[in-house]
Length: 335
Image (cartoon, rainbow, N blue to C red; front, side, top):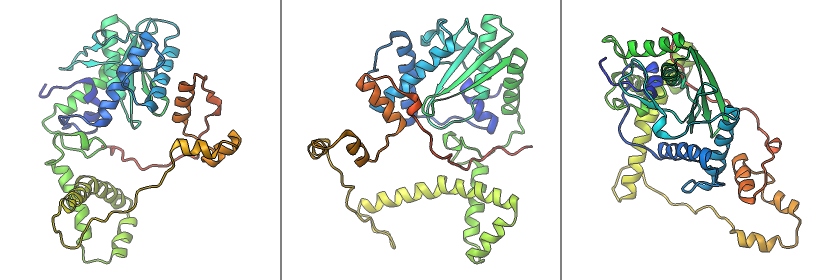
């Protein structure tokens, strides 16, 4: 094995065999770690709230707890970190699950942020559990607490071994090539990656073309292959070059540097009214009138948190969904 591979790196390596995690952390990662810990401890101690969590995350954690309890069917759920190590045959680094229910034969991982693919990571966890408990199959649950969504996978030993082995083989190949994907921003090689540099250069080359902008646009839209390539290249150039450059431009101007053609302007801040003023103004109106004046609606997470703080059971039937939101997502090209 030419590189250290952990279960959590498997989904990234499945997208790009040369992926290497960048050092450091982020606010989103720290929030995820705190929520993981909160859910594990709330399952054991069952307090109403968890110290250290932001107010809006209390309801998020509580949903995660109830979801795992439902999945357990009343059986014991192991959440102590020292008992959640996942030693996976074939991998050089162990992983750590968030919960295991041996009697129900499942392992669970709590995820925050965007809904991403974690199938390869969960297959490794299932393989570790089957190896430890001499089982022929195991189930894995990915619990996306921000979306209140769960995805479930069940693997036989052969399926889990095949999934893990395929990623290891590709990541260990001397012929592996870099493949741009949604995890590039997390990779230690992103600045010097030849695939990213090539894509960014191709996107910027179009801007420098002698063609009119309308001709460039028509040329891209006329060919699905070129359209796909441009979208990937431009999105990458925007994230890896344009955004950092514009952020640096703003910082340097704010620090007093003179940069031709640009300046920083300051606008008025958003106006608002404090709660005590709202209370005085609404002293003689009904609750319904006040609610309508405040917009008539509340975000689902805020509603759940409000109920939690008020000691009222959440009426989940009151939670409605708006129209579906379509988003672009780049997928791995078939070889």
